[in-house]
Image 1 (cartoon, rainbow, N blue to C red):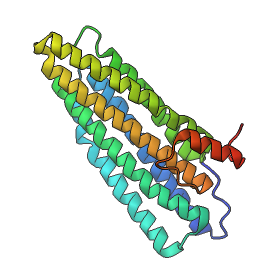
Image 2: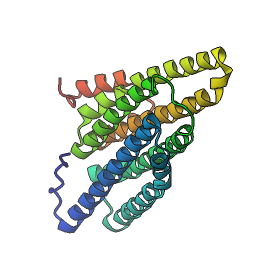
Image 3: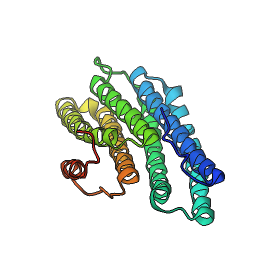
Length: 243
């Protein structure tokens, strides 16, 4: 991923501070992205050891959040950033909170995957969950890319993908309920899958939040609680988005 240019500061040390924070955020995002991949692999392949490993290593995500938060607090206290630099620090603090929560959801999926590894896998090998997982991995990749490039266009396009995640989540939930009604012996496994897809749906929500922070960093507009269509119209009217 290509990092945005931060060389406009007259203070070399301030520039280095900001670049160091951005690098740490991208490293944290990369690790969380890998945790998501490993948790899904553990579920699909019935790998109990891998699922437990994902859950056990969540402490690393927590440690990264604390480290970056402390760095941002130091920058706020010693550099007194303004304008775009202040937006970047504030958005970074919010971003690492969402990344940490994505890590928590990966931990949950890992634990459930470890438990389900001890029961017979369905004939479709969790095909629908695997498809949802691939969608979310692509969303995570694009979200981190948008952050690295400070690309508001990509952030807006990626945020729109959350609607697809919600639709797939609801479809799998309905399917799981049908399975439980048809065969009570499948209730425990179906409930576990419902919890898995609930965690995956939340991953999508957190990724969407990060995309909104990118738009805030780039354009100085808080777009939370605003429809994506309205955001796109306003930014196009301001000439802030590529047509």
